[in-house]
Length: 390
Ligand SMILES: *Cc1c(COP(=O)(O)O)cnc(C)c1O
Image (tube, rainbow, N blue to C red; front, top):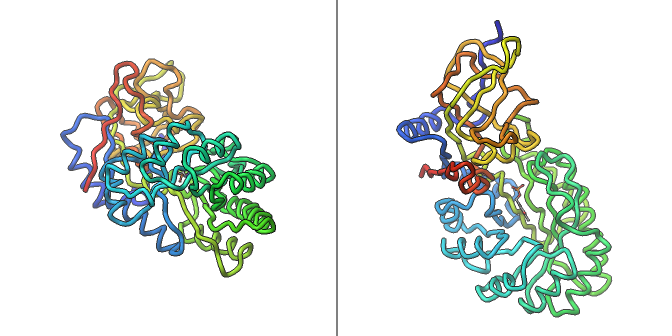
């Protein structure tokens, strides 16, 4: 006999909100995502209240649902976009181009020219090739330079692909000025779901060094972009937002003193993650042999239906069943014919032993990086449906 199935649901969602989502979803065919718009708004306010001097550029890719973008436009948020498609989307939702930053360092000349024609005047860069494309296709624009970080301490690191070494960045700053662009600031991303706040300390120090080097060449940088990385509430614990804020303020003051440059944040996961509940159904419970102690539980939601961040079991979503009674350790897998479509095998999730076909499972903290990551029609399964609770 194993322990009772235990789950501290209040850590992820209020009882009241859960009941509301349950009521809303009771007649709908699973799987689907429900996004609680109030929660996104609450997270935006929480971050801005903790770091009131900062400007928020919401990382659109985390959750671009129309209602989410419209609400943020209304609240005065800025937006970090990565493609001309995201650009058109946020413009169509009413964002003005002065509030948009083109944060992807990998872009076609055509994309830069298009963004410029729509009024975008701020671009991220980390290479000479990209910088020259910006100079040609978006003359006179502000550019900020992304430094490389190693992503350690992050559950979903973004290391290696983006950013450049400080020495390379230094040369790019000088080149930008020569090319008639405005070298505006420095950016970094410490890795997504970053649980080690000290990573901001290292990166901020490098930024300070670059501010000073630029200044000794007569270039005054004005902006520091602290990126994303702020956490959502998954199973592995993280510090409170206020702790992130206190520490980051301390790091900034250590390096920059009392007169800080313009500070930008680019939260994605933090804003949208906690707002989502993915409602899924058990398709099958099985055992691979009589003696095997673990059950396999197959859900109608898997790696290709929005849960790709379970790759290497990096993101551990809280999963809840309303059944009670003894629990059992299970291996969780998705519905497709790809053997990669296993959610958790190393990490054994404790779920009620009485779980059976047709039971619903509620996957919390799925508001970020789920719907947009779901595949178009692998095995014929449609992309993850999303509803917004307004
Ligand atoms: C994805 C991304 C973000 C958002 O990161 P989170 O960890 O989700 O907050 C911010 N900035 C850039 C440039 C990104 O690519």
